[in-house]
Length: 503
Image 1 (cartoon, rainbow, N blue to C red):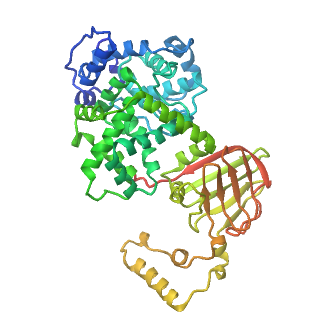
Image 2 (cartoon, helix red, strand yellow; image 1 turned 60 degrees about the horizontal axis):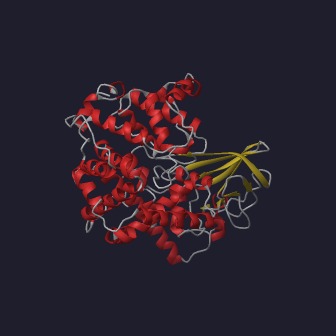
Image 3 (tube, rainbow, N blue to C red; image 1 turned 90 degrees about the vertical axis):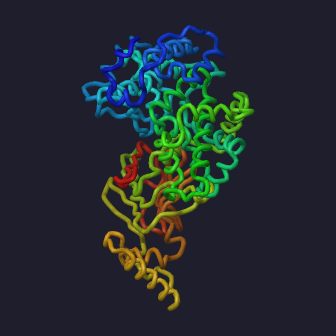
């Protein structure tokens, strides 16, 4: 394959800036140890043509299931799966969980091709339930494939690997979640200084470590990710842990003793990874990754197995966690539920679901008085926070407390010159003169349930599998049941809103 083979998918101007095609054109070695050294040294990293040949060879040699979809299968199904949709408007498969497709110097046609390939993979691999890394893998492989069908075949071989000693890409939420816990274990052991920083600056350090795959499959610039992928294809999954640990080490080195750029360490690390070229070269990143000592595949396997067992015992469910995964970062959110009896109800929720992590895994209520619940079918009815209609429910407060509350409200009003930043009288009351606890139970979420409204009952309770629910009167919204009191769920939708200035 020459370097012209994929030009129809690539913006050549961007590509030439990202990776110069200057390297050797042939690779003759066949021994694994020699391949390891060449991959780590970047032997084929500067040659598009050679990297394409090496990828073809390494992926061809992956031990796979007996029947694996190939290029001819793609040619047969792509029209049926995609239909008449334009490539740019194609939805992404549910299992990627709204993961953005990295551009990786692809042109518009290339970005559309990634979506087509992902949909065809979803059709051929119905057992994949969670795989947010796949868009980045397909986008990179498209660079080194003559056409979409060849890229599809390569991705399918990676997904169909059946060698237990050569684990490649997580394809279930259990595998993904246990890998995040395993990464946390490795950070605690091999990056203790960075771990102490993460504990100090984050409310839930496990939520920070749950982002580790995103650093690699999405945030890393193309030339860095390609170098990581070179070694990953030769050595397997442990390479990903090594590189993510190296990223955290460099982040700690740069940021130790400095204030974080925001109050969100997850976002700070993502920004650091996007701009990693300012700090370290791909060579130095890999050098740091492989300098970590006493790091074995066996250790990773044991940690992974132990964490998977612990998650199963806790009853971690795919659907519940996926809902949180999709909603986090959005504020407010709109939750819609359709029951098997065709009733429709839901809730408007003011606060980011990530707030649930502040309770250390225990169920705790959060949210504000902007929350409300409603039903749409069989008739429309809305129930807002009870205090809005009955302000007398607020607790009496002393004159001193009232004066303090008034002072705080006036201070917040006068401290901002932007009218949009000022608190309305209602918001001021909400913030500084809260009613009793039972009338302020807005939203709560754990791994085994989701609750809206509390006190004397729950406006909505949904189980961890998002299959069953119940509804009743609660003090927070003074509502009637929103549908049949015990119901089966036919469909759940969550609509998120986000400030367009937040990346």
